[in-house]
Length: 124
Image 1: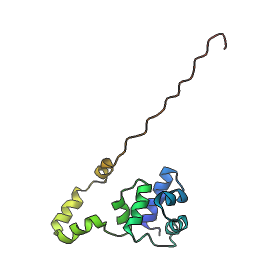
Image 2 (image 1 turned 30 degrees about the horizontal axis):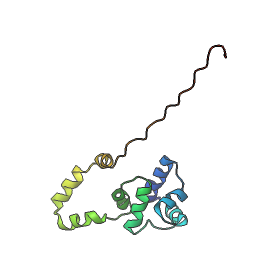
Image 3 (image 1 turned 90 degrees about the vertical axis):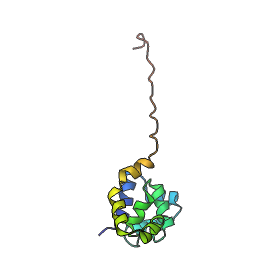
Image 4 (image 1 turned 45 degrees about the vertical axis):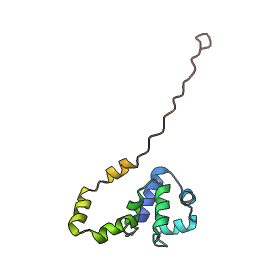
């Protein structure tokens, strides 16, 4: 059974039409290491720093990818340690991945219009 981490990374790579080597290069990690993780020969990264680099290379929320590895993101750990169960439930109920995506949304690239020159009638 594929890990959630590898499923997410593979699906995003397919969506972006990007190779393992390109993701590894953008992330600053070894391509064979990433390949072994995606082929289930190694466990997902244990360090949040590496997970974040992979997430950034694929434009994925680092928290989402960290959770897919079965870890609690470091910036959320104090919340879970100090909050009561009711606060945690309220946070989960109010969480919206769409809102998270909207906050990080980048402007779409401008489309270039190519104008074809018009030919005089006597040429045609």
